[in-house]
Length: 546
Image 1: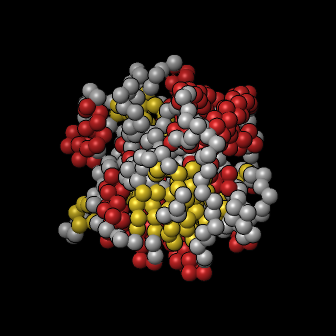
Image 2: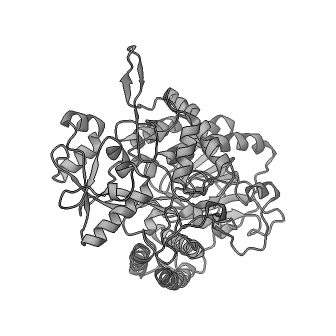
Image 3: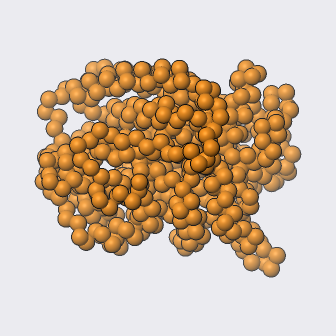
Protein backbone atom coordinates (compact mmCIF):
# COMPACT_ATOMS: atom_id res chain seq x y z
CA UNK A 1 0.00 0.00 0.00
CA UNK A 2 1.53 3.33 -1.02
CA UNK A 3 1.66 6.38 1.21
CA UNK A 4 -0.29 9.05 -0.64
CA UNK A 5 -1.29 11.42 2.14
CA UNK A 6 1.40 13.59 3.74
CA UNK A 7 0.82 17.00 5.27
CA UNK A 8 2.30 19.39 7.77
CA UNK A 9 -0.91 19.35 9.79
CA UNK A 10 -3.68 16.72 9.85
CA UNK A 11 -6.94 18.07 11.31
CA UNK A 12 -9.49 15.40 12.19
CA UNK A 13 -12.89 17.10 12.34
CA UNK A 14 -14.60 19.84 10.35
CA UNK A 15 -16.59 21.90 12.84
CA UNK A 16 -15.86 25.43 14.00
CA UNK A 17 -12.62 24.38 15.71
CA UNK A 18 -11.17 22.39 12.84
CA UNK A 19 -12.21 24.75 10.04
CA UNK A 20 -11.05 27.93 11.77
CA UNK A 21 -7.73 26.27 12.64
CA UNK A 22 -7.24 25.24 9.00
CA UNK A 23 -7.85 28.80 7.83
CA UNK A 24 -5.35 30.20 10.31
CA UNK A 25 -2.72 27.66 9.16
CA UNK A 26 -3.44 27.80 5.42
CA UNK A 27 -0.54 30.09 4.50
CA UNK A 28 2.05 28.07 6.44
CA UNK A 29 2.08 24.72 4.66
CA UNK A 30 -0.09 21.84 3.47
CA UNK A 31 -3.07 21.07 5.73
CA UNK A 32 -5.51 18.16 5.56
CA UNK A 33 -9.05 18.23 6.94
CA UNK A 34 -10.68 14.84 7.50
CA UNK A 35 -14.47 14.88 7.78
CA UNK A 36 -16.40 11.70 8.50
CA UNK A 37 -19.31 12.95 6.38
CA UNK A 38 -19.89 16.06 4.26
CA UNK A 39 -17.60 18.82 5.49
CA UNK A 40 -20.43 20.83 7.06
CA UNK A 41 -22.12 17.87 8.77
CA UNK A 42 -21.52 18.34 12.48
CA UNK A 43 -22.71 20.06 15.63
CA UNK A 44 -21.50 23.48 14.51
CA UNK A 45 -23.87 23.46 11.54
CA UNK A 46 -26.85 22.77 13.82
CA UNK A 47 -26.01 25.37 16.48
CA UNK A 48 -28.89 27.81 16.82
CA UNK A 49 -28.14 30.21 19.68
CA UNK A 50 -24.84 31.92 18.94
CA UNK A 51 -21.41 32.85 20.29
CA UNK A 52 -20.87 34.62 23.60
CA UNK A 53 -18.49 37.59 23.72
CA UNK A 54 -18.19 40.86 25.60
CA UNK A 55 -19.16 43.51 23.05
CA UNK A 56 -21.75 45.74 24.74
CA UNK A 57 -20.69 48.95 26.48
CA UNK A 58 -22.44 47.95 29.71
CA UNK A 59 -20.82 44.48 29.75
CA UNK A 60 -17.36 43.51 30.99
CA UNK A 61 -14.86 40.67 30.93
CA UNK A 62 -15.23 40.33 34.69
CA UNK A 63 -18.99 39.83 34.40
CA UNK A 64 -18.61 37.16 31.71
CA UNK A 65 -15.90 35.46 33.77
CA UNK A 66 -18.05 35.49 36.91
CA UNK A 67 -21.06 34.11 35.02
CA UNK A 68 -18.99 31.28 33.52
CA UNK A 69 -17.44 30.33 36.85
CA UNK A 70 -20.83 30.41 38.59
CA UNK A 71 -22.34 28.15 35.95
CA UNK A 72 -19.35 25.80 36.23
CA UNK A 73 -20.22 24.98 39.85
CA UNK A 74 -16.78 25.43 41.35
CA UNK A 75 -14.69 23.48 38.84
CA UNK A 76 -13.76 26.08 36.21
CA UNK A 77 -10.10 27.00 36.01
CA UNK A 78 -9.99 30.81 36.39
CA UNK A 79 -6.97 31.15 34.09
CA UNK A 80 -8.65 29.17 31.32
CA UNK A 81 -11.87 31.13 31.72
CA UNK A 82 -10.11 34.50 31.58
CA UNK A 83 -7.98 33.45 28.61
CA UNK A 84 -11.04 32.35 26.65
CA UNK A 85 -13.23 35.32 27.42
CA UNK A 86 -10.57 37.97 26.88
CA UNK A 87 -9.90 36.55 23.41
CA UNK A 88 -13.60 36.48 22.51
CA UNK A 89 -14.09 39.90 20.89
CA UNK A 90 -11.10 39.55 18.55
CA UNK A 91 -12.47 36.24 17.28
CA UNK A 92 -15.90 37.74 16.62
CA UNK A 93 -14.23 40.55 14.66
CA UNK A 94 -12.24 37.92 12.72
CA UNK A 95 -15.49 36.18 11.79
CA UNK A 96 -17.00 39.49 10.72
CA UNK A 97 -14.03 40.04 8.43
CA UNK A 98 -14.63 36.60 6.92
CA UNK A 99 -18.20 37.66 6.20
CA UNK A 100 -20.28 35.66 8.69
CA UNK A 101 -23.76 37.26 8.31
CA UNK A 102 -24.50 38.05 11.94
CA UNK A 103 -27.83 39.66 12.78
CA UNK A 104 -27.55 43.45 13.03
CA UNK A 105 -29.68 46.21 14.52
CA UNK A 106 -29.74 49.98 14.14
CA UNK A 107 -28.16 52.00 16.96
CA UNK A 108 -29.71 55.30 18.16
CA UNK A 109 -27.18 57.20 16.06
CA UNK A 110 -28.23 55.28 12.95
CA UNK A 111 -25.18 53.02 12.78
CA UNK A 112 -25.55 49.30 12.16
CA UNK A 113 -24.31 47.14 15.03
CA UNK A 114 -24.38 43.50 16.11
CA UNK A 115 -27.63 42.43 17.71
CA UNK A 116 -26.93 40.74 21.04
CA UNK A 117 -29.30 38.36 22.78
CA UNK A 118 -29.21 36.88 26.27
CA UNK A 119 -29.25 33.25 27.37
CA UNK A 120 -29.37 31.30 30.62
CA UNK A 121 -26.64 32.11 33.15
CA UNK A 122 -25.57 35.36 31.43
CA UNK A 123 -25.94 38.67 33.27
CA UNK A 124 -26.02 40.73 30.08
CA UNK A 125 -26.91 40.46 26.41
CA UNK A 126 -23.69 39.14 24.89
CA UNK A 127 -24.74 36.45 22.41
CA UNK A 128 -23.78 37.24 18.82
CA UNK A 129 -26.04 35.34 16.44
CA UNK A 130 -27.35 34.94 12.90
CA UNK A 131 -31.11 34.80 13.65
CA UNK A 132 -31.61 31.28 15.05
CA UNK A 133 -29.28 29.55 12.60
CA UNK A 134 -25.87 30.78 13.71
CA UNK A 135 -24.26 27.42 13.05
CA UNK A 136 -25.39 27.35 9.43
CA UNK A 137 -24.04 30.86 8.83
CA UNK A 138 -20.75 30.14 10.60
CA UNK A 139 -20.18 26.73 9.02
CA UNK A 140 -21.02 27.86 5.48
CA UNK A 141 -18.73 30.87 5.72
CA UNK A 142 -15.79 28.86 7.06
CA UNK A 143 -16.30 26.08 4.49
CA UNK A 144 -16.42 28.57 1.61
CA UNK A 145 -13.11 30.08 2.69
CA UNK A 146 -11.49 26.68 3.28
CA UNK A 147 -12.44 25.50 -0.20
CA UNK A 148 -10.68 28.52 -1.72
CA UNK A 149 -7.25 27.59 -0.31
CA UNK A 150 -5.04 25.39 -2.48
CA UNK A 151 -2.96 24.47 0.56
CA UNK A 152 -5.95 22.84 2.32
CA UNK A 153 -6.88 19.31 1.20
CA UNK A 154 -10.39 18.20 2.17
CA UNK A 155 -11.21 14.53 2.68
CA UNK A 156 -14.96 14.11 3.07
CA UNK A 157 -16.56 10.78 3.99
CA UNK A 158 -13.36 9.65 5.70
CA UNK A 159 -13.31 8.44 9.31
CA UNK A 160 -10.26 8.08 11.54
CA UNK A 161 -9.67 4.59 12.90
CA UNK A 162 -6.72 5.19 15.25
CA UNK A 163 -3.84 7.55 15.82
CA UNK A 164 -0.34 6.52 14.77
CA UNK A 165 2.24 7.10 17.50
CA UNK A 166 5.96 6.43 17.69
CA UNK A 167 5.62 3.93 20.54
CA UNK A 168 3.15 1.81 18.58
CA UNK A 169 5.51 1.82 15.59
CA UNK A 170 8.50 0.79 17.69
CA UNK A 171 10.21 4.17 17.34
CA UNK A 172 12.38 5.65 20.08
CA UNK A 173 10.55 8.97 20.23
CA UNK A 174 6.88 8.73 21.12
CA UNK A 175 4.98 11.42 19.30
CA UNK A 176 1.89 11.45 17.12
CA UNK A 177 2.90 11.00 13.49
CA UNK A 178 -0.45 10.52 11.78
CA UNK A 179 -3.59 8.43 11.71
CA UNK A 180 -5.12 5.46 9.97
CA UNK A 181 -8.13 6.74 8.02
CA UNK A 182 -10.97 4.72 6.47
CA UNK A 183 -12.31 5.96 3.13
CA UNK A 184 -16.02 5.25 3.57
CA UNK A 185 -16.57 5.24 -0.19
CA UNK A 186 -13.97 2.59 -1.01
CA UNK A 187 -13.71 0.72 2.29
CA UNK A 188 -9.91 1.00 2.29
CA UNK A 189 -7.75 2.26 5.15
CA UNK A 190 -4.79 4.52 4.37
CA UNK A 191 -1.99 6.12 6.35
CA UNK A 192 -2.25 9.87 6.73
CA UNK A 193 1.13 11.12 7.92
CA UNK A 194 1.72 14.57 9.38
CA UNK A 195 4.13 16.57 11.47
CA UNK A 196 1.26 17.52 13.73
CA UNK A 197 -2.19 15.99 14.30
CA UNK A 198 -5.14 17.91 15.71
CA UNK A 199 -8.26 16.29 17.16
CA UNK A 200 -11.29 18.52 16.53
CA UNK A 201 -13.87 15.73 16.44
CA UNK A 202 -16.51 17.19 18.76
CA UNK A 203 -18.24 15.48 21.64
CA UNK A 204 -19.86 12.17 22.48
CA UNK A 205 -23.56 12.86 23.10
CA UNK A 206 -24.53 10.03 20.76
CA UNK A 207 -23.81 7.67 23.67
CA UNK A 208 -27.32 8.62 24.80
CA UNK A 209 -30.61 7.52 23.32
CA UNK A 210 -31.95 11.08 23.08
CA UNK A 211 -29.63 13.82 21.90
CA UNK A 212 -29.69 17.14 20.11
CA UNK A 213 -26.52 16.15 18.24
CA UNK A 214 -26.25 14.70 14.74
CA UNK A 215 -25.24 11.07 14.33
CA UNK A 216 -21.54 11.92 13.97
CA UNK A 217 -21.07 12.86 17.68
CA UNK A 218 -19.61 9.50 18.69
CA UNK A 219 -16.60 10.56 20.77
CA UNK A 220 -14.06 9.47 18.17
CA UNK A 221 -11.28 11.86 19.19
CA UNK A 222 -11.66 11.14 22.89
CA UNK A 223 -11.56 7.37 22.33
CA UNK A 224 -8.59 7.51 19.95
CA UNK A 225 -6.61 9.77 22.28
CA UNK A 226 -7.33 7.44 25.22
CA UNK A 227 -6.15 4.40 23.25
CA UNK A 228 -3.02 6.33 22.25
CA UNK A 229 -2.17 7.09 25.90
CA UNK A 230 -3.76 10.47 26.71
CA UNK A 231 -5.50 11.28 29.95
CA UNK A 232 -9.11 12.43 29.98
CA UNK A 233 -10.87 14.69 32.47
CA UNK A 234 -14.38 15.26 33.85
CA UNK A 235 -16.14 12.82 31.55
CA UNK A 236 -19.03 12.53 34.04
CA UNK A 237 -20.26 16.03 33.16
CA UNK A 238 -22.63 15.49 30.25
CA UNK A 239 -24.86 18.44 29.56
CA UNK A 240 -28.51 17.79 28.77
CA UNK A 241 -30.12 20.63 26.88
CA UNK A 242 -33.44 21.36 28.57
CA UNK A 243 -35.47 21.89 25.42
CA UNK A 244 -35.40 19.47 22.52
CA UNK A 245 -38.58 19.35 20.42
CA UNK A 246 -40.74 16.39 21.44
CA UNK A 247 -42.16 14.81 18.30
CA UNK A 248 -41.61 11.40 16.69
CA UNK A 249 -40.53 13.04 13.43
CA UNK A 250 -38.33 15.73 15.02
CA UNK A 251 -35.10 13.80 15.49
CA UNK A 252 -32.46 15.92 17.26
CA UNK A 253 -34.24 19.25 16.69
CA UNK A 254 -33.11 21.76 19.30
CA UNK A 255 -35.25 24.61 20.61
CA UNK A 256 -32.68 27.32 21.21
CA UNK A 257 -31.85 28.68 24.64
CA UNK A 258 -32.54 32.09 23.11
CA UNK A 259 -36.29 31.34 23.16
CA UNK A 260 -36.14 31.43 26.94
CA UNK A 261 -33.75 34.36 26.78
CA UNK A 262 -36.42 36.34 24.91
CA UNK A 263 -39.14 35.54 27.44
CA UNK A 264 -40.22 31.97 26.71
CA UNK A 265 -41.93 30.27 29.71
CA UNK A 266 -41.76 26.61 30.65
CA UNK A 267 -45.18 25.15 31.46
CA UNK A 268 -46.57 21.91 32.82
CA UNK A 269 -49.15 20.03 30.73
CA UNK A 270 -51.89 21.89 32.64
CA UNK A 271 -50.39 25.23 31.57
CA UNK A 272 -48.88 26.19 34.95
CA UNK A 273 -45.32 27.57 35.16
CA UNK A 274 -42.90 25.70 37.44
CA UNK A 275 -39.33 26.98 37.09
CA UNK A 276 -39.79 29.60 39.83
CA UNK A 277 -40.07 26.71 42.31
CA UNK A 278 -36.56 25.48 41.45
CA UNK A 279 -34.50 28.65 40.99
CA UNK A 280 -35.07 32.38 41.44
CA UNK A 281 -33.76 32.90 37.90
CA UNK A 282 -36.58 30.67 36.62
CA UNK A 283 -36.20 30.02 32.87
CA UNK A 284 -32.85 31.86 32.82
CA UNK A 285 -31.18 29.49 35.28
CA UNK A 286 -28.20 27.48 33.94
CA UNK A 287 -28.97 24.44 31.83
CA UNK A 288 -28.24 21.81 34.48
CA UNK A 289 -30.83 23.31 36.82
CA UNK A 290 -33.47 23.69 34.11
CA UNK A 291 -32.90 20.17 32.75
CA UNK A 292 -33.17 18.57 36.21
CA UNK A 293 -36.32 20.59 36.94
CA UNK A 294 -37.97 19.37 33.74
CA UNK A 295 -36.83 15.79 34.39
CA UNK A 296 -38.23 16.00 37.94
CA UNK A 297 -41.62 17.29 36.82
CA UNK A 298 -41.94 14.75 34.01
CA UNK A 299 -41.21 11.89 36.39
CA UNK A 300 -43.45 13.32 39.12
CA UNK A 301 -46.40 13.65 36.76
CA UNK A 302 -45.63 10.74 34.46
CA UNK A 303 -45.68 13.27 31.62
CA UNK A 304 -44.09 12.64 28.26
CA UNK A 305 -42.97 16.26 27.95
CA UNK A 306 -43.37 19.82 29.21
CA UNK A 307 -44.08 22.93 27.12
CA UNK A 308 -42.18 26.07 26.15
CA UNK A 309 -44.39 29.05 25.39
CA UNK A 310 -43.23 32.17 23.52
CA UNK A 311 -46.65 32.94 22.04
CA UNK A 312 -47.13 36.02 24.25
CA UNK A 313 -44.58 37.79 22.02
CA UNK A 314 -45.82 39.21 18.73
CA UNK A 315 -45.93 36.96 15.70
CA UNK A 316 -43.63 39.35 13.84
CA UNK A 317 -41.04 39.17 16.63
CA UNK A 318 -41.15 35.36 16.75
CA UNK A 319 -40.85 34.95 12.98
CA UNK A 320 -37.96 37.41 12.71
CA UNK A 321 -35.97 36.11 15.71
CA UNK A 322 -36.69 32.38 15.35
CA UNK A 323 -37.39 31.71 11.67
CA UNK A 324 -35.86 28.22 11.66
CA UNK A 325 -37.73 27.10 14.77
CA UNK A 326 -40.98 28.66 13.52
CA UNK A 327 -40.65 26.94 10.15
CA UNK A 328 -39.72 23.50 11.52
CA UNK A 329 -42.44 23.53 14.18
CA UNK A 330 -44.92 24.61 11.50
CA UNK A 331 -43.95 21.64 9.36
CA UNK A 332 -44.85 19.39 12.30
CA UNK A 333 -48.18 21.10 13.01
CA UNK A 334 -47.24 23.57 15.76
CA UNK A 335 -47.84 27.29 15.33
CA UNK A 336 -45.48 28.71 17.94
CA UNK A 337 -46.99 32.18 17.54
CA UNK A 338 -50.22 30.80 19.01
CA UNK A 339 -49.38 27.69 21.06
CA UNK A 340 -46.58 26.26 23.22
CA UNK A 341 -43.87 23.89 21.99
CA UNK A 342 -43.64 20.36 23.48
CA UNK A 343 -40.07 19.84 24.76
CA UNK A 344 -37.91 17.29 26.61
CA UNK A 345 -34.28 17.32 27.80
CA UNK A 346 -31.72 15.62 25.56
CA UNK A 347 -27.96 14.98 25.70
CA UNK A 348 -26.28 18.02 24.23
CA UNK A 349 -22.64 18.61 25.17
CA UNK A 350 -19.61 16.78 26.57
CA UNK A 351 -17.92 19.07 29.12
CA UNK A 352 -15.00 16.70 29.68
CA UNK A 353 -12.57 15.35 27.15
CA UNK A 354 -8.91 14.94 26.26
CA UNK A 355 -6.71 16.85 28.68
CA UNK A 356 -5.12 19.82 26.96
CA UNK A 357 -3.54 23.13 27.85
CA UNK A 358 -4.24 26.62 26.50
CA UNK A 359 -2.27 25.91 23.34
CA UNK A 360 -4.11 22.65 22.72
CA UNK A 361 -1.22 20.34 23.73
CA UNK A 362 -2.18 16.88 24.93
CA UNK A 363 -0.10 14.24 26.76
CA UNK A 364 1.45 13.12 23.46
CA UNK A 365 3.87 15.36 21.62
CA UNK A 366 2.60 16.70 18.27
CA UNK A 367 -1.00 15.80 19.18
CA UNK A 368 -3.40 18.65 19.86
CA UNK A 369 -7.06 18.64 20.94
CA UNK A 370 -9.39 21.60 20.51
CA UNK A 371 -13.12 22.25 20.73
CA UNK A 372 -15.60 19.94 22.40
CA UNK A 373 -13.25 16.96 22.26
CA UNK A 374 -10.79 18.77 24.55
CA UNK A 375 -10.85 19.27 28.31
CA UNK A 376 -9.53 22.80 28.79
CA UNK A 377 -11.07 23.33 32.26
CA UNK A 378 -13.16 26.17 30.82
CA UNK A 379 -16.61 24.71 31.49
CA UNK A 380 -16.11 23.11 34.89
CA UNK A 381 -19.10 21.04 35.98
CA UNK A 382 -21.52 22.75 33.58
CA UNK A 383 -21.02 24.67 30.34
CA UNK A 384 -22.73 28.03 30.12
CA UNK A 385 -24.80 28.71 27.02
CA UNK A 386 -22.93 29.82 23.88
CA UNK A 387 -19.46 29.40 25.41
CA UNK A 388 -18.90 26.33 23.22
CA UNK A 389 -18.38 28.01 19.85
CA UNK A 390 -16.35 30.66 21.67
CA UNK A 391 -14.04 27.93 22.99
CA UNK A 392 -13.67 26.42 19.50
CA UNK A 393 -12.57 29.74 18.01
CA UNK A 394 -10.26 30.86 20.82
CA UNK A 395 -8.39 27.59 21.15
CA UNK A 396 -8.11 27.17 17.38
CA UNK A 397 -6.41 30.56 17.34
CA UNK A 398 -4.03 29.70 20.20
CA UNK A 399 -3.23 26.26 18.75
CA UNK A 400 -2.48 27.79 15.35
CA UNK A 401 0.09 30.14 16.86
CA UNK A 402 1.79 27.30 18.71
CA UNK A 403 1.81 25.01 15.67
CA UNK A 404 3.28 27.73 13.45
CA UNK A 405 6.06 28.32 15.99
CA UNK A 406 6.94 24.62 16.22
CA UNK A 407 6.26 23.10 12.81
CA UNK A 408 9.60 23.95 11.16
CA UNK A 409 11.50 21.90 13.75
CA UNK A 410 9.39 18.75 13.33
CA UNK A 411 10.40 16.00 10.92
CA UNK A 412 7.78 14.09 8.94
CA UNK A 413 8.07 10.45 10.01
CA UNK A 414 7.62 8.00 7.12
CA UNK A 415 8.58 4.70 8.78
CA UNK A 416 4.99 3.64 9.36
CA UNK A 417 3.51 0.21 8.83
CA UNK A 418 0.52 -0.01 6.49
CA UNK A 419 -2.90 -1.04 7.76
CA UNK A 420 -3.01 -4.83 7.96
CA UNK A 421 -6.28 -6.56 7.16
CA UNK A 422 -4.77 -9.77 5.82
CA UNK A 423 -6.24 -11.89 8.63
CA UNK A 424 -9.80 -10.60 8.63
CA UNK A 425 -12.86 -11.47 6.58
CA UNK A 426 -16.06 -9.74 5.52
CA UNK A 427 -18.77 -9.89 8.15
CA UNK A 428 -22.14 -11.46 7.49
CA UNK A 429 -23.48 -10.35 10.89
CA UNK A 430 -23.89 -6.56 10.66
CA UNK A 431 -26.99 -6.93 12.86
CA UNK A 432 -24.59 -7.42 15.80
CA UNK A 433 -23.30 -3.87 15.37
CA UNK A 434 -26.81 -2.42 15.13
CA UNK A 435 -28.04 -4.34 18.18
CA UNK A 436 -25.05 -3.35 20.33
CA UNK A 437 -25.38 0.29 19.26
CA UNK A 438 -29.02 0.38 20.38
CA UNK A 439 -28.36 -1.48 23.64
CA UNK A 440 -25.48 0.83 24.57
CA UNK A 441 -27.43 4.05 24.04
CA UNK A 442 -30.47 2.76 25.93
CA UNK A 443 -28.65 1.67 29.09
CA UNK A 444 -26.59 4.88 29.08
CA UNK A 445 -29.85 6.86 28.99
CA UNK A 446 -31.50 4.75 31.69
CA UNK A 447 -28.54 4.37 34.06
CA UNK A 448 -26.11 7.25 33.37
CA UNK A 449 -28.52 10.06 32.51
CA UNK A 450 -29.65 13.24 34.26
CA UNK A 451 -30.07 11.51 37.66
CA UNK A 452 -27.72 8.68 38.71
CA UNK A 453 -27.29 6.15 41.52
CA UNK A 454 -24.50 3.77 42.51
CA UNK A 455 -26.60 0.78 41.53
CA UNK A 456 -27.43 2.21 38.10
CA UNK A 457 -23.77 2.97 37.43
CA UNK A 458 -22.70 -0.52 38.47
CA UNK A 459 -25.27 -2.04 36.12
CA UNK A 460 -24.08 0.19 33.31
CA UNK A 461 -20.45 -0.77 33.90
CA UNK A 462 -21.21 -4.49 33.75
CA UNK A 463 -23.07 -4.04 30.48
CA UNK A 464 -20.47 -1.84 28.82
CA UNK A 465 -17.66 -4.22 29.72
CA UNK A 466 -19.57 -7.11 28.17
CA UNK A 467 -20.21 -5.06 25.04
CA UNK A 468 -16.56 -4.06 24.81
CA UNK A 469 -15.55 -7.73 24.87
CA UNK A 470 -17.96 -8.50 22.03
CA UNK A 471 -16.85 -5.44 20.06
CA UNK A 472 -13.16 -6.32 20.45
CA UNK A 473 -13.78 -9.83 19.18
CA UNK A 474 -15.77 -8.49 16.23
CA UNK A 475 -13.16 -5.81 15.49
CA UNK A 476 -10.36 -8.38 15.50
CA UNK A 477 -11.99 -10.81 13.08
CA UNK A 478 -13.86 -8.75 10.50
CA UNK A 479 -13.10 -5.90 8.14
CA UNK A 480 -13.94 -2.63 9.76
CA UNK A 481 -16.79 -0.37 8.76
CA UNK A 482 -17.75 3.16 9.75
CA UNK A 483 -20.50 1.79 12.01
CA UNK A 484 -18.09 -0.55 13.78
CA UNK A 485 -15.53 2.23 14.32
CA UNK A 486 -18.20 4.45 15.85
CA UNK A 487 -19.57 1.66 18.03
CA UNK A 488 -16.08 0.87 19.30
CA UNK A 489 -15.54 4.53 20.17
CA UNK A 490 -18.97 4.93 21.77
CA UNK A 491 -18.34 1.94 24.02
CA UNK A 492 -14.95 3.29 25.07
CA UNK A 493 -16.30 6.75 25.84
CA UNK A 494 -19.27 5.24 27.70
CA UNK A 495 -16.87 3.34 29.93
CA UNK A 496 -14.95 6.57 30.65
CA UNK A 497 -18.18 8.40 31.51
CA UNK A 498 -19.29 5.61 33.86
CA UNK A 499 -15.88 5.33 35.55
CA UNK A 500 -15.75 9.09 36.07
CA UNK A 501 -19.29 9.17 37.47
CA UNK A 502 -18.46 6.35 39.90
CA UNK A 503 -15.45 8.28 41.20
CA UNK A 504 -17.39 11.45 42.02
CA UNK A 505 -18.88 11.04 45.50
CA UNK A 506 -21.03 14.18 45.41
CA UNK A 507 -23.59 15.97 43.27
CA UNK A 508 -22.17 18.89 41.34
CA UNK A 509 -23.21 20.68 38.18
CA UNK A 510 -24.29 18.19 35.54
CA UNK A 511 -23.59 15.16 37.74
CA UNK A 512 -26.44 14.45 40.15
CA UNK A 513 -26.40 11.32 42.33
CA UNK A 514 -29.25 10.25 44.60
CA UNK A 515 -26.64 8.49 46.77
CA UNK A 516 -24.59 11.68 47.19
CA UNK A 517 -27.15 14.50 46.78
CA UNK A 518 -24.99 17.20 48.39
CA UNK A 519 -21.97 18.97 46.93
CA UNK A 520 -18.64 18.97 48.70
CA UNK A 521 -17.18 22.29 49.74
CA UNK A 522 -15.69 24.03 46.70
CA UNK A 523 -12.29 23.84 48.36
CA UNK A 524 -12.57 20.04 48.34
CA UNK A 525 -13.89 19.80 44.78
CA UNK A 526 -11.51 18.46 42.17
CA UNK A 527 -11.48 17.33 38.58
CA UNK A 528 -11.90 13.66 37.76
CA UNK A 529 -8.77 12.66 35.84
CA UNK A 530 -8.44 9.19 34.32
CA UNK A 531 -5.13 7.90 32.96
CA UNK A 532 -4.78 4.89 30.64
CA UNK A 533 -2.41 2.11 31.56
CA UNK A 534 0.46 2.77 29.16
CA UNK A 535 4.15 2.03 29.25
CA UNK A 536 5.22 5.51 28.09
CA UNK A 537 5.09 8.75 30.03
CA UNK A 538 3.67 12.12 28.96
CA UNK A 539 6.16 14.27 27.12
CA UNK A 540 7.96 16.94 29.11
CA UNK A 541 6.20 19.94 27.58
CA UNK A 542 2.86 18.65 28.83
CA UNK A 543 3.60 18.54 32.53
CA UNK A 544 2.22 22.05 32.93
CA UNK A 545 -1.28 20.61 32.41
CA UNK A 546 -1.20 18.93 35.83
